[in-house]
Length: 288
Ligand code: SAM
Image (cartoon, rainbow, N blue to C red; front, top):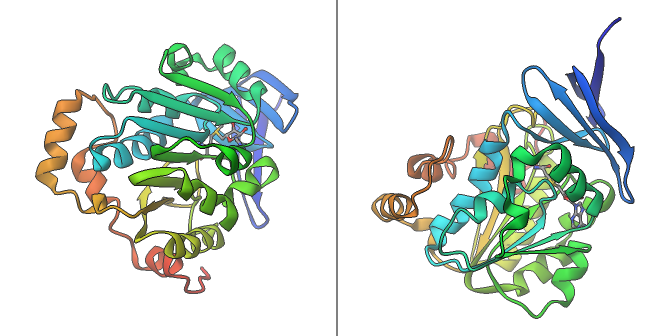
């Protein structure tokens, strides 16, 4: 019998497929279709509406770079907000920092949380049971519009701008999220793969340039987010992006973190953009 495949149709002209070696779960939640399956190369994989969200094999890259870059650059983060992040990997990495007093996670789909706790426990690794975690099941866009709480780091660990995730790529969402930053706070966003999704990065950077004194992006290459390096949007009114290598080394050493991708050198180098991505971030038209 020929193998079954998960086909990602995020892009009209480009598709990636992962072989489904063992299907674990496949159903519709209140918001999206969730599938969890095993693949010989990537381990367990979760897709939402057929788009790869997280794989056991390479999730460390994405979660380490989205959590430790803003937290170690900030240097004194106590309160973190995660929008999305239903698999629990981002909360896991945030809560590894002993100085974090609270991590609020606003996830729209309880089905994702419940199913990942059951079928992908290796991603959250107990984060959902950490007393510092405050899990809120709600639309992240509504949350930032209404909350009076303030955060030192805000991480938009969302799906791509389709379905419930679409609202998390709007100027009004970014404006409300910025309002929720404490003084010197940092906002980082999942901003897709610029080679295939240049418009998303360009739009986020355009919005961030109007909202923040320091609007930038940084990169990491995540094999299952196909198409080249992926971009993380970065916005802050502080000067923390200019943290010196010496200070970063000290903070990283004091954190006691053991990481597989993040290093202080990788952190600083991640902001060095190839010409074509810098051009996209500046709003220049891009065509491959
Ligand atoms: N690492 C993935 C990526 O880079 O695409 C993201 C993983 S995480 C599973 C994405 C989460 O965002 C999903 O659990 C989804 O339910 C959640 N989400 C989408 N739209 C949302 C919204 N408007 N408010 C809160 N969570 C949302």
